[in-house]
Image (cartoon, rainbow, N blue to C red; front, side, top):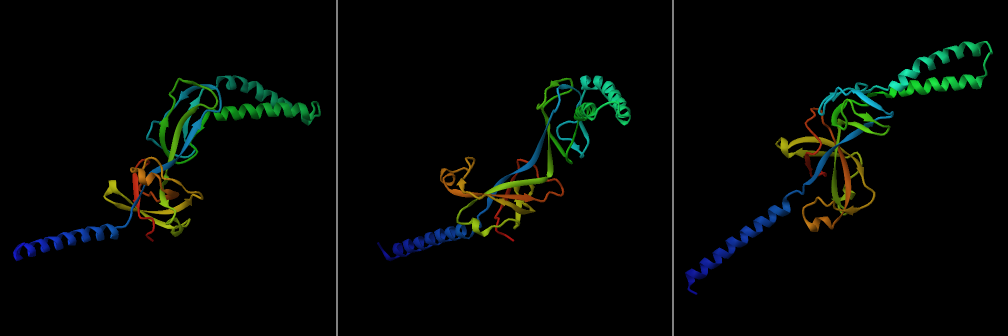
Length: 246
């Protein structure tokens, strides 16, 4: 090989080596980002009585307030019994004051009234929280039995994600620690979060992780709750975080 070719070959080798080193350094210097799917706490409201639905005035996606009426049932059988039960109870109040009935007899009539009043109250299903209607399982006119799911309501301010951290890194985390998350869908907008829970036992990475190698690693689930003042965060979105930033 002549001198010019030798110099050219050496130059190419040096350039190639320089590119390889540069790529390796960039990969080593880049922070590892964890990703988790956002979820909200959902409450499923079920029927406590057997009846037909006469009103279901909300739709999926509606914002509702605590104690707002969501479902009303006819409860005809309880309404028919109510006048007689109330009359018997009022009569019993007068009789027990005069000693004309026993305490046991009065207790039975009082129990009947409380039981019927409670079931009538169950006929009006109200929201237990301020939230958003996620799913309607039934419609007006349908007959339901006790335990039938009617609809679900989610609290958009209680939104969180699980991140899965290798066992040799989890020691750096603690409950209450501040976490900064970024939302790719919103131009990497940042959201403040705090660690709620660190699972006590390691597990294999969940199956939805892309690579087989990652799925065979032992990791700890770390639950992080994020602030959601503008209600931008929604269930199903992907939150990214390095977790260890203060």
